[in-house]
Length: 151
Image 1 (tube, rainbow, N blue to C red):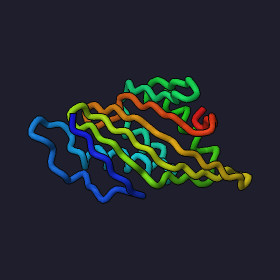
Image 2: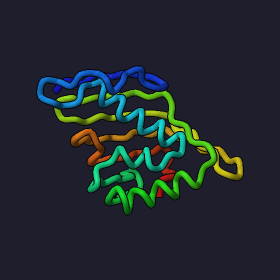
Image 3: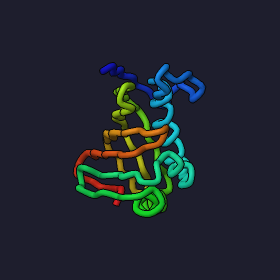
């Protein structure tokens, strides 16, 4: 298994990087996929967020034992509530560990959010992404301090 670690605010990788000979996404493509997803989430662009998921995806907040099934049902509903709960969302200080051979990426980052009353929530989180055909098939989320902002 080949893994690499990178740390950044946002990646300088682009989706124009060539695929491997097997057709699997490259290291750069996997990092770019995850960081484009977070950029869409920070922009509050629900449709762009959901474009990153397979139809039958499962998103689990593992630290809260909270699974969400299906891109257009459970996952959409969770993101609608999350995006609607905050006037500002920002994900920064990424550290990625990429498993190119198995199309997986683990991303640790800092999440900073401000709700509509001006209250700040700051968390450290680690997400594990399982990718199939360029889309998230499964996502597992672990958040610090036992706080679940993804209900």
